[in-house]
Length: 241
Ligand SMILES: [Fe+2]
Ligand SMILES: [Fe+2]
Image (cartoon, rainbow, N blue to C red; front, top):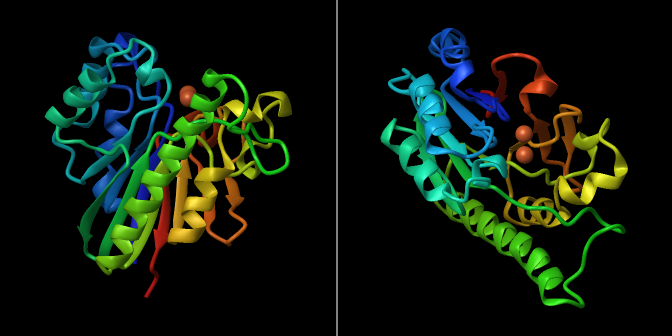
């Protein structure tokens, strides 16, 4: 069995320094690794990223992250990524990584994702260039997620997780105003997950949403935004023997 701890939307800043570390220090007792589902900072500044870095530096379990939209706000996502990597975090954007756990090999495919909405009510690649670019941004992200999950499938992992910031399904947005669903996720991410295969999909971003959902293909989806799970992290079990 592999135990996956996950949280998103920790939105750290100078005044939250040290808040999560005591809980993170208990991770080895209950989890094999920690996934961070984006929105780790408030405005994506290097200063805020350094607060996150100090929170997770030298944790006794591997930490794998994707960035969120807030981590892009200061338009220095490369810098935020570099600060986190310097603290030992594996930051994924359209890539895959494998973590060797006592219960097997866990593959993680990660991308921030983007919006567009869900089947029947989604944006299309039509009209103004900026509209086409909006949808193409999501499509590129979904394509990279698909490729990363497929790569992990070929590597023969015990279990695979799709880690995103934006949601692949509408289920886990329950509680959010329907008017903003197109800005919270895209069905293209779920299509990628279902066609490439995964055992769990973890996302954040929807602070008012719900924890539990499922893709059309039957992959369980968990919204781990901290305001939703109301704790430092949740733990999910995969590949039970
Ligand atoms: Fe957030
Ligand atoms: Fe977000």
